[in-house]
Image (cartoon, rainbow, N blue to C red; front, side, top):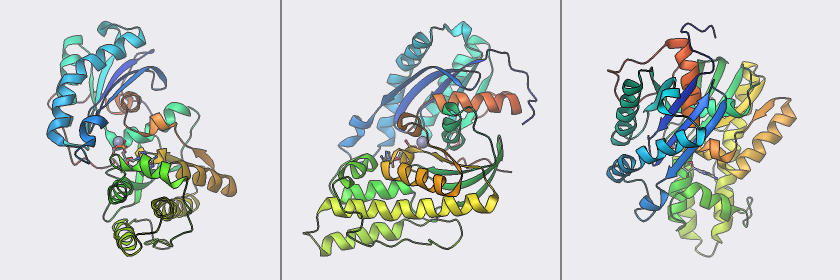
Length: 341
Ligand code: KG4
Ligand code: ZN
């Protein structure tokens, strides 16, 4: 990637993330060095409703954002005048939640006289891996699995991507959340299934592996229905066995396709990103697959897999050098897609 826009060095970027139910701010220097990363989760606020309530999320962002930004600046040992650019997630996400971060980021940028950078949340999940592995080099295959997205992407160079496949119905995280709700595990479902599955037998039930040998698209709505049907027909089957078998089937499909994609595009490594990348079995299987195939595996720490603002600030550093500042007239884009050529 040839930089087209001059950025100073060191370049301290304040990142802000409010796309869903985490209010986060971070200061990252030169795209790699995390000076601070503060995440205030709203999980407890939404748990009793069994999912994120958009209006509540927006209101909580309004209350939490200023203190979270202040804490990120204090932890990084900086004042507003030390910040060289302000970045925030502009999409995809909940429109009201996004608007809180976008408005605040523009106001900070204007007040401090520095560039504003609007960041794609999906691309930010990818750059979370680069934050922890500065020697990560394309060509890579990225498996991005979150609550709203399941994507298999070929990264040919920095900021240059080809989307190979995505989900045709539910996202992987959505399937985890729905199955968890059926098993009475509450919200968020992914971590609860992950924990429960540790006591279960992954071979107890052979749940379907949709589209396993066909292309790079995914489908997770069938397995969700199979779990519900099986659970109703076999009320005595331990929930841990159902959770472990469901998780096994989802991970099997994700890893099989990612591996095949890496082989086909000649990638040197496989990179995991997004909230579901925090799943223990997925992490283990991807590492095993990479060892078997001679690929480098990039598996961010669990904190970097779930929503945070360090990944937003890191992405902004790459985007600012390539594209320059985002105009202040740009708005939130709830339906933003993964950027590709
Ligand atoms: O990336 P993320 O924090 O937010 C979105 O951008 O969607 O992902 C949240 C998703 C939720 O569906 C949650 O259940 C799932 O990630 N998740 C997990 C685990 N931790 C979070 N899924 C499976 N196993 C986990 N350990
Ligand atoms: Zn996310």
